[in-house]
Image (tube, rainbow, N blue to C red; front, top):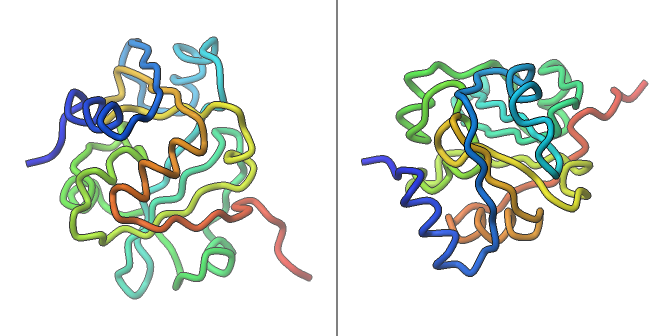
Length: 168
């Protein structure tokens, strides 16, 4: 059974990770998040749940304004050709629905099926914001705390410049 927001926040507390959660109307897109959450302090982020041609799963977490083209991203992260994964696979692997994709969903990836990629520029921020397993709230924490959480879930994230231009 997938973790709930309450389970997640309790896990952050148990890990000694400082966090602040803000309630807001459900948001499904970056544009909606900017409308309802843009006033919140910290870097706002987006999350892409992807599958590569070889069947590997990828969670790419980046600044909400990062221009990410799937063509070329595969070379930067070391994957086969990428495409968006289905909602069914998202639910199966991370226990969340579209619109609520978040690095916090790694709490549900006990089998460590998902490869995690974090945007280098996002990780240089003072605070980062993600949905706490629901798109009706936003939880802020430091990038270091995010890394601690991801590692506590058994994942080793890669920090990559996700919007780097292609080499000539």
